[in-house]
Length: 259
Image (cartoon, rainbow, N blue to C red; front, top):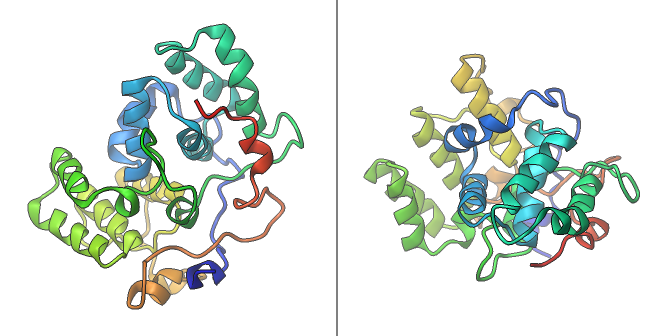
């Protein structure tokens, strides 16, 4: 077992929706460009372009959208409208995919409240293969392709080099924080990143002018600092709680097709 997995993730699990239903479907496109971490921005772009995501992408992106406040009805509408633009008709969607979305929201099966993936879950498990768009772009992308992607988002050359240096040192979490700083035009993110939904919430606070910069001393656990000098900068593991453990999602996995 890698030593990073020995840490306990004690951050928010984003299973309780304080803002449930406050994100409209029309907001997702603009939000993806300004407040989504690169992993989710990549998934959203692939979905819009291909009108489909394979198993790993649906899991990672679907739970993230749930975490930012999409209701079950919104999620069904979102995925249905996109998939029927591709090769999936309404009947096939309702038979093959709708149940899995309801299951994700705890409305089927064991009625478990599944939580969005933490950064560690994204980085260390289920690596993407050809045709996949899930995973962590800083961990799983070819450095040259990552560079081209960052250039397409108009990031400054110096900032891109900083990100690539962090990636070369396997500090993927720090690379994502640098991406946050560059895309939000700030010098210090002011928080230790360990969850894609945390990225989204901090971005929204900053853009709305309502964020109070958190000092790192206030963070309950900083697994990143423990690994920054000695290995990959990945976040600590998830906390065991009353929601479904992130590393034991076989029940939900079984309801997703690998198409």
